[in-house]
Image 1 (cartoon, rainbow, N blue to C red):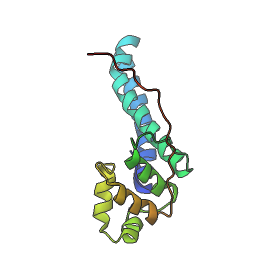
Image 2: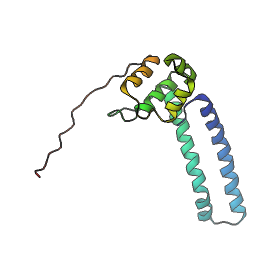
Image 3: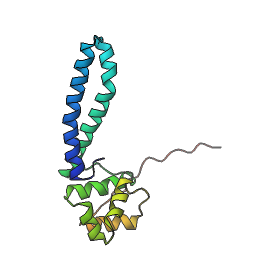
Image 4: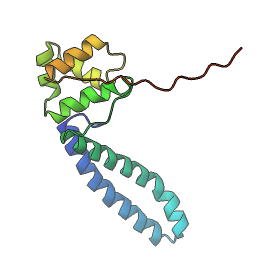
Length: 148
């Protein structure tokens, strides 16, 4: 997951470099007389990484627009906290200042996607970002119990 503008710019640059590298590798393999299938098998892992990087860039751009995924039973709350910071254009340093913690703490929390964050701590981050999280509780169909 891309977490800041520097990582974003580096990723965009890397996409361009990787595209050139893939094209050069494909041409080299063809010159060596590899068949179409052999070239495909050799290039596929590079393409897979390239596509993953493009997806991460697209995801970051989506977050910068404020387009978030829905949260269900708090799954993904850490990613949401990161997304909210990104969408507001707040740096990790600025969030740390607002929270009264060292920047390395915010960096570590985000690297771990706030794994194990308490509701209280998540609330502090939301407050520091000036965001209110609302939830809706919906009943799901009860699972029928079978007699033992």
